Image (cartoon, rainbow, N blue to C red; front, side, top):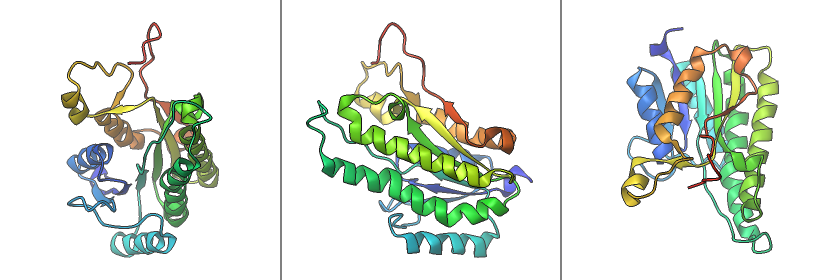
Length: 228
């Protein structure tokens, strides 16, 4: 399959990571369907919490393009607290919707198209917190861990097909606006959104069977206990 012919959905395309991924994929000639309910220009406004709306989107893409070659799920969010006891279950409710429910709706709607594809990829961006939770990150870490488990279940469903489900892992993300707002901060252990975009684009350069179900750590390794 020609790189020029890939049809890729980017969910949560309105944020800095989504914009970087959309730009990287479009520059190499992919047909990118960008989805975000924030009203960002160039994005389809689809509520990913609405399972029927997501199913309609999948059918629309199938009807217009005949297939889906990739789904990049970038819907995110963070809530935390100083201590475990101060964890708000309202934060859990929010993170459940953002990090888990949207993922469930998208993956369930697009799994048949990925299964039928010649070289499909499904990717989420997770965090080291899912495997190394801290007391103030209980809700966030638990939501990320659930999202990883769900994605690995999708990977099992794709086993034996030409498609793969992959998890990219970071500590935190950084983009140019963050650097401009804090010019003295080094962001040593952050992953640039452009590196996420490059990693996503590179997933089609690897064999699907070898990729399927992998957690690929893109986070710089902290040195001397420095987490700045």
